[in-house]
Length: 199
Picture 1 (cartoon, one colour):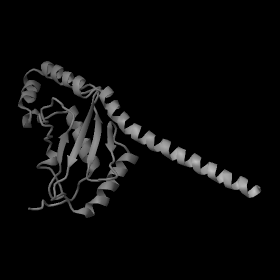
Picture 2 (cartoon, helix red, strand yellow):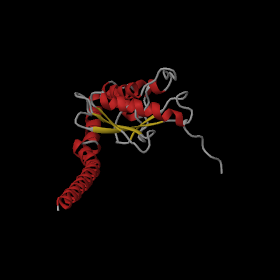
Picture 3 (cartoon, helix red, strand yellow):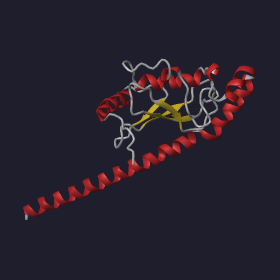
């Protein structure tokens, strides 16, 4: 069995540091999801920009690093369905930063997410991955807007995103509850020990 090439593990601390920097100094409208178990699982929720058909939606975006990274650019993917000229029906993202303009010596996750967010504001129909969306954008913008807005309402509503976040929050809340129970139990045991010493 041929083993597939893996990403250089030495990149792990670099990726983790960049993700933590974005969390500490957030990009407006971009919410990074930090996976402590796998720093190469790079995902973020991007708020649909104002005055676009994506306004009111939240779009889950994922970066897939190839084994040759950073010599080769990562692939951008929307897990949330979106009607956009530069996003294929499978969610693949076409943007020059991840194509011909990729610079292996000057890259940052923050810049990549900023560029993807900007793509939601200013599409480039000249290099469409979704030909139907690109054609509508160029020839009948009102119809394109309606179609993109419809899919935003169906697949990317903030209510759905809150449910997703809510599931994550439940996990966090459960962990907090367990910690509090353990702390309370420990306090009781310590109090009992102190009381016994007094006796």
